[in-house]
Image 1 (cartoon, rainbow, N blue to C red):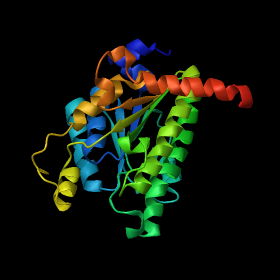
Image 2: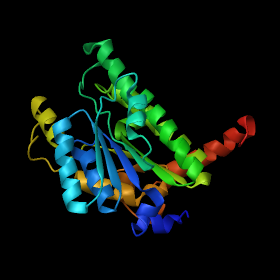
Image 3: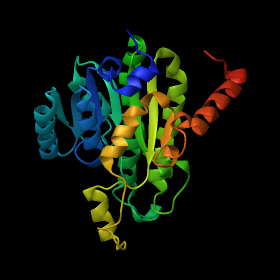
Image 4: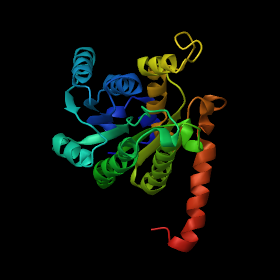
Length: 278
């Protein structure tokens, strides 16, 4: 039985709406690891995906000991051509009721011509092809069951071009538009879709990057916490299509994401005049 959105968002029946398994891509640290903790705390078994085996095994032990859930570790490079196919095969018959795609940070942070085309192609595959194929594979089963959720973790960079983040902002814009379109298509099938657009988050990676780039107060600057973002995202999953963090948290919570939601609804209705509403 599919629960109403209020019950699902409260966490009381989160497992029934989005269980039994959550797949978290990019789970080894930071926001991804926070999502794993938040999902497990709500009773979901977790499939942890990243390249760092040791970090995933450590997180697996934490989740099992703290929440008594099942955990599957999949060491996978999501930038390869066959990444999605291999991941779907490895998941086997497990029912993924919640997919969280958190991979795809920009490891280069450089002007477009200062990084090789091979490196840009890897980032492009991770943030477009793999996202698309996994959303299709797991989303089709959710729609068939009329139950589930998809979270695409993105960035404020998705909202427009940014110097030294050309490919990153372009690929995150792809995810944003894909996610909002899927929200419009799947909401009548009781499958929730949420883009989470975040700015800088307090992780060891960003602290190290800021220090390497010579940013003042790189180690002391106050930054949003990964656990708070993950918790807010899961509570907001039924309020898609997009949560711009922290901007949308200001004011009435009932209006969270209302501007993007109204935009997608209006444009979908407008387009239906020419392309149909099937």
